[in-house]
Length: 635
Image (cartoon, rainbow, N blue to C red):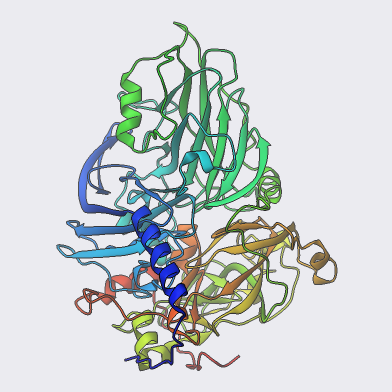
């Protein structure tokens, strides 16, 4: 157990008075927000078929959590489902609070069926759109919702015109399948499961021919400005979002303000959020909102993916609006649906012209055009020095199945596909103690961790499309290992990472999410990273700040972050199939020299026993390869 005995200098009397008064003001301004999430199974009818799905409080999407910067949040999770559950608060920094991050066997034991768990965290120093979701394989497809943080001084303190209304737009997928089974199949590289439709706020839209199909619909007043809070909660796809005859002004991404950027299309990958202003300045009428999934072109594997629609319609209701009003749930969207069509009678909705589904360049330019808003309060400076550097390749490889020590590869049934970082695939440790608890109490469970390599084992033409199909060219690059990968950082370490997407058996982009920290996006490019010329392109003045960065198709992205939040943090791809196949690692951040830079002990009600580790192991598929255990401090 950790004990501290630190000398403390006595402050001056005036300093004590000032500290007490400012603390009192702060405490008076902050609020305690409390929710109860009941996770259960319920039948929902989509595509003319009834499907049993996991939901929170009977809603899809789940309830939105709406708070003000500095508030404290308490969420009681009651698990009435048959599955193990954890909830991750995506993008919440969890400063000195890694215990509430919600990753099974990384930060906590899962919440067993018919058990409860309470998450407690605050949202100090953050504003904008985040979200919450289950962190159990595939269940986040229906267990998710918005987490909206408004400025302490009210909507009038936004660094953009105060909107007439705020509208959450949650893009997702509908799976007419048992999602727990889909997750198990993906972890064993069985890829015959695909979503059946795409959704906006849980609704299919009218592209699907089935009676009773609803679409998300919003009434807007001519000339008014609306703030769209867009979240991609899908498992598989990046989406293009457009509204016919309207433009967006992007003002934030991942709860960080950006230099206003005007565009007619939003590109948003799984895990990302985008805040955009929409001015209702088109001629009166009805306009389709369309969400189109994109995918890598041939020779990459082509999977069934579906567009979906919502509806924007103008109305003549000039009743006083409340700028803080929010359509924050699927129920609110249904109420809009029931209010009638609006607009001129008999109007045919106008549809936008969408990018091609294989157009990945539009996504590249959208993300490249975003920069941080300068001179905004709480804006952090890019660290000039770098303490540790990594070059991490992202791809797919293979391991031998049990009983085939010298297996055949290139799609042979003797081998198993895995996703990799620097040619190593992540697996959960075969232990009964979460890694965070092992780290805090210095138990031998940490000995199972092996070092994430700082560079790939070999250099080759990473973006050669000839590597995408099975063999023979890529055959010698396939063999990989599967271990519990981690990297340890001293408190305050400035880390630079260059992620390089590869063409190894796929040509996907990769939305990489780091828990507990924001990252500075210094630069991104297509093709292979070349330090000799690409470092000169780094934006060290106002780079985009994100918690989820999209490494472009067959391209690269360079970032920096400061490892100053003690704990055990997950870094992983937010494509569910990549995560289930092992594109992940653990970053361990050590304590700093003082109490306020050190991880406190676990909450008194933290669960300590009773989980089913076999079920958890299935999520990531524990390979049978025997590898030498290395100390985590070795390089």
